[in-house]
Image (cartoon, rainbow, N blue to C red; front, side):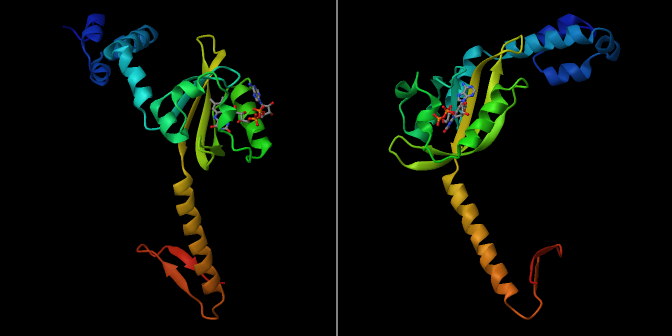
Length: 204
Ligand code: FAD
């Protein structure tokens, strides 16, 4: 089959190969039409249940809410991270996860970003409350989901428990501060360098 034929696009499953094989003139002339065709083909390559399973089995807590943050869907990892059964959280507001210790301005910033006219993503760390009442540090991303007219219809939340990572980071920072204060209290000039002679630590 000639590689300038549209049929070639429809039967070949390897999109990257199709693009590189395409006749350059064809791409130039009918660019928009081709992109549309490739997008249709891309979706057709995989069955839709696979997309559902990808979200369901993703190793990060995923929830989809309405515009008031009422939970409409939550995946398996959401249950693992929060301790709530999925049936318990459906219809509840995401605020059930709040440990009520995050400064309110942070929530204000979150909502300003995601519900603003630009419909931006918000990323940050919040103190969340596990079902058992224990706090955990959530690394959260909230983004608006839009329809074809770019109107926000839902919100997508993704978070993971980073409490342990935070502890490790804090421990490392404290150790660094301790070493720095020991170095600074010495009257001898000292410097710690890495293998490429980069300065890691020095004293004042
Ligand atoms: P709120 O009553 O929510 O008020 C806090 C601020 O947000 C106020 O300034 C208020 O005006 C503003 N606000 C609240 N709702 C809206 C709205 N619909 N549109 C515009 N502005 C609004 N919070 C967590 O603590 N942990 C989470 O894991 C978490 N995940 C979220 C996931 C998603 C997808 C979304 C959309 C929100 C999530 N939130 C999460 C935020 C949550 O909805 C609450 O805003 C937050 O918990 C504070 O609750 P609150 O009752 O103390 O205050």
